[in-house]
Image (cartoon, rainbow, N blue to C red; front, side, top):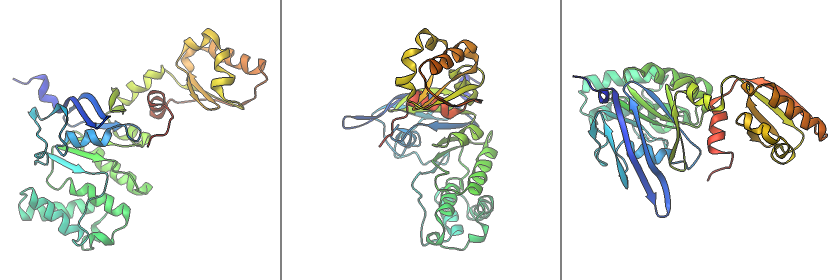
Length: 316
């Protein structure tokens, strides 16, 4: 009889990884459904790649565990037939042709030679590399190498595909090609994708997971995460002075009406906060002789929530 776990492709339970005093991943727990595309988002140094390596068995956690299709995953045995990986740093063979590389990786996974050849041809066409089939890997442009890198993770038709920053360095046409291909996998393959591109995550992912300093901050659909800012659109006001020092201290209790997003000279808050907050802000601007450079109403984005949760500080 089916159980609730039958719908779970991957489960992380308290994943933790330390490097000396640095806790790269801190008690990370979540589940990924079968056929789902999950976006794994976070600033530089948030622990995304470290977590991904543990989830696909390339790195042993200091604590916690990973289950793939309900079975425990052991580091060092992660590259089984059910898992495919396209790492952030492109890994290809410079002295093999594109077709040879795909055939070779297929044979490594015990895919029969005729099947590996057919899949290699199909993947080269899918990623716009059919004309480069007999070119050596080292002769490809960076973007072509990135596309080949993704194709290499798909030859054995894994049940779970891990993509680490797959669109880094791609031109707009290649981004669309990769996005459309990954989207077509939904329902048939589970995909976990790390990305810094909020717009791509909105277009591609069923759910997104936001992490920072190794901790889980949010996990929901894109619309669900956007609702953390409140319903409706955002008012966006730009002043000629720093909002945090010139405006916020003067708003008083009006600040409690809605979450306020402060970005230098920019202030954002949900339109559902009502006219009272907007009226108070405009009154203070006028009263203090500040200049309103811009006022507009726009749709909330995933990036708005991301910045609110993780802050604007640059990370090394």
